[in-house]
Length: 121
Image (cartoon, rainbow, N blue to C red; front, side, top):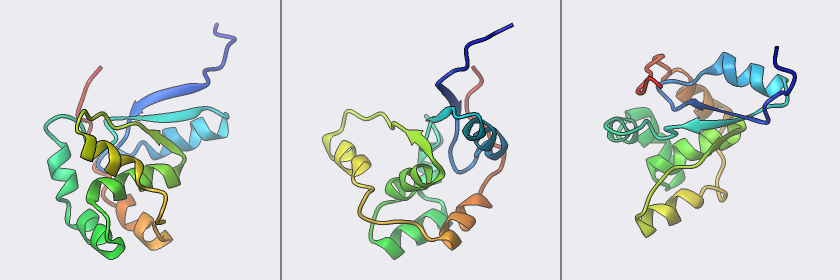
């Protein structure tokens, strides 16, 4: 029996694997959710960054696809810490506070969920 509730749980979460029920449950328990592979993960990031829905939303806000995905995580209350050693990508990844996604845009990303897990750990 575990008597200590975790403060944070890290799960694979990205537009193609959204873990909606898990995120909702963790939030209801006061547990922070951190996205593992917030942009899709090795070998899968490019596909998500090129996704037509993501690209259309990015163009509407004059931002990048990565910024749309990171903003989507933020608005869902999911912590996303994308890894990069590229200074331009690091700058891009933290520049997500000057725009917001609409409810309609959030709904459009919501339907991208394929239950597609990219890593088994």
